[in-house]
Image (cartoon, rainbow, N blue to C red; front, top):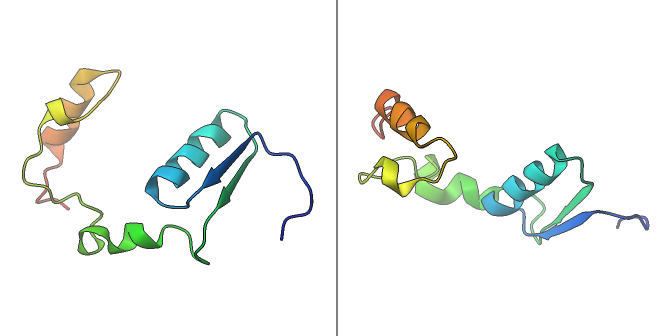
Length: 85
């Protein structure tokens, strides 16, 4: 159990979204606690996509991704296809 401590952010769930949110908050200087019912974080990430983390989608197009730089997705997807993973 945690000793009493102040956190800027408490995240429930140590899956992909929770870990990403925690990393983003940490990079922004926030103190973060991530709570999960499992004793291992990210367990479901390892199971998704047969261990390939769903990089194997056949319908990969730049329009399916959000980015501040729309040209980044085009460049990245040209370099690495689902077959590379």
